[in-house]
Length: 349
Image (cartoon, helix red, strand yellow):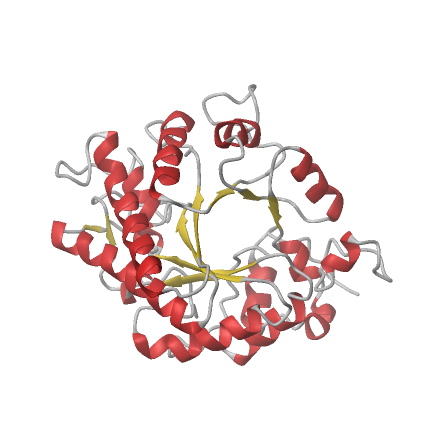
């Protein structure tokens, strides 16, 4: 089950009953549940009504989410992140990033470059959020290093223009995300009394002319493996068809990445895997665990469809009349309706 935000947290940053219900309806017989992202610092929030993990006061809230996510029998992984420049001015008054480079939201928002000491604080806060995930009963954390959030923001030559130890050379651009991985790994070793996984989500390239490219991402992946990650989660627009930006006619991203991993750690991938046939194709292509997002939103019984045990055809679209039956939180449904093509929304029926 994919880490998809539901915009459904309470105003105080705690997990809502609607979100708990949303998970409980969908997790029966799922192999792994990865939650939507949660911010490790107060100014790291990326979405309105996002549940928080930046303070010990949120441990009881996270424990309720862990219980709901694990209620179907699967392990549950908490996705943690800092949105960086991808946050919104209405949510954060102090928007920070690796450098004062505008994000995709537009040139009107220029972030403040983090100081050296502040970068170290972010590293520590990722570790603290991991300790809270352990205390809350999760079975792992996934570091969201994709989608131009802060971890990728430091890795990218497009957004990282620093001239200190956190930027400039590729080695320096890797320093922040690798420091986070190391700190989180140390926290797991110190606090976890049962197996606790560390995953990393990555975008392997960027559309900018000076953006991240596959060659650097493959080198970075090697360093992630050296640091001890347990799985790699590649986020793609289309998991089965995506090609590198600089080689659009070449091998698929999945072929390249799975070839490099060579079975050393599991490969997860998300992107347009909505029906079981697509998940089967993904496994044949070398993906260890297909990551299903929209499929579970529209079909809480998605696993029954994969087993051929569902009574009705699998749904590939959604309408307002489906919302109560599917326990879709009201705020999530508002986003779906206003997204302009994110979901295939029926206007009636």
